[in-house]
Image 1 (cartoon, rainbow, N blue to C red):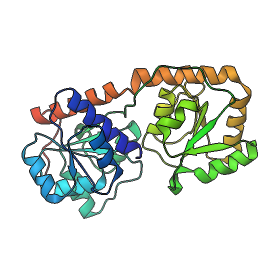
Image 2 (image 1 turned 120 degrees about the vertical axis):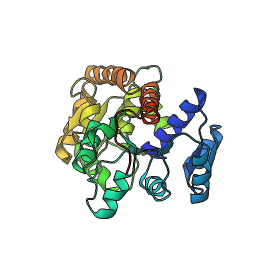
Image 3 (image 1 turned 90 degrees about the vertical axis):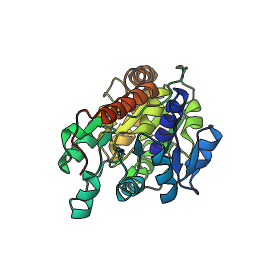
Length: 296
């Protein structure tokens, strides 16, 4: 379960709890389908036939990744909302242009992602920024001794290699977590190093748990972390990362300050409730025909 999958799960669960009729289509072999079943969300395997059937009884088709975006466009379903979660540049070829033009509205998870869509020629009135939302448990004292946690990933864009080198320079151990919601409960520092990032929902989750965050100063993370207030931003350079970790290790008052600042920032700007509310506003706009051009 990566950040985007958790967002889909939280959105589907939140909409269902609010009384909306939601069908989630997910890959048969994927973890998301199994987790959604356990959460009591109506979920079906993602296949072309199931997509047609679910779309026929629905008011909105909301695609959350490239595969579902392509399926919705090929099936010529309407209306279609697409969440754009990634930071990389959109292609400018004919097929790409057709795919991206045949969408009624885009939800960008950050201002940075919105700019990527604008650069690809998407009309500004068809894009709405809705930040990711995460659960925000009550704040708690930071555990001692300091336990440093980072997400486990094999994605070369995520910078685990830089963090491992930085940990050696700083003389510290880093726990690479495969299940952040559990490991953040005992973390007292979270390090999120990435070469490219749409927003950074893992950093948001750590902040929500009251864990001080060190993050790469790139892309959407610049909208999440307020330097020296809700976290520390660093260059993607091992010495800089090591220096930030040593600084937090040696300064308990700074750890406490960033923990409280991060927790407050999530409560005010990145809650699940705000994410669900913003998404529903996009749906309402699409269904009422506001603020957008018809898909071609």
